[in-house]
Image (cartoon, rainbow over all chains, first blue to last red; front, side):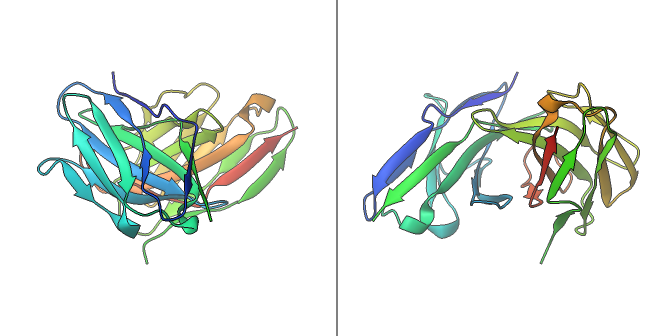
Length: 112
Length: 114
């Protein structure tokens, strides 16, 4: 069965500092991994995905994520956080079932 | 700009009422999905559909049904609403493919059942 875990309910970081939002997954076969972001009172927006190839994936708004097969992780990163990055972030995993399973979400708070 | 439109942003219903949540996409996508979002639980899949008149149960289908009579429209039905169905409901669509394609989400429908 597919599953995904985001171990932190909230991540706090100062503006200008690097940020990491963690995600681990479990899936049989090759994983398809995604990050989505939700701003207040909005639907989810796609940030980036890993299907195959280079383990470092670059996405929207300067975000990137690193796929680590041995640790079954797909952490979201950004070198320099902005206050406007404050939002709810979801990791998701897809596989051969055709379904996309989401984690419980991590609230990112960037303080000036 | 591609869009998934959910007909109601906010609804308030009484226990036992029948509730319809409508979702329309204009991208000619084959796949459509209904999720519910609850704090601390993330998004949980209720039902999804790969084609017209086809439906598959997700992880939490109990108390819900769906209808897909046309490719662009996917409706979620609560036959008899209960207070534990108070939640944010998100519709999404994607092009064909097994879990590898990006979902486009609607803005959500926040349902309160009194």
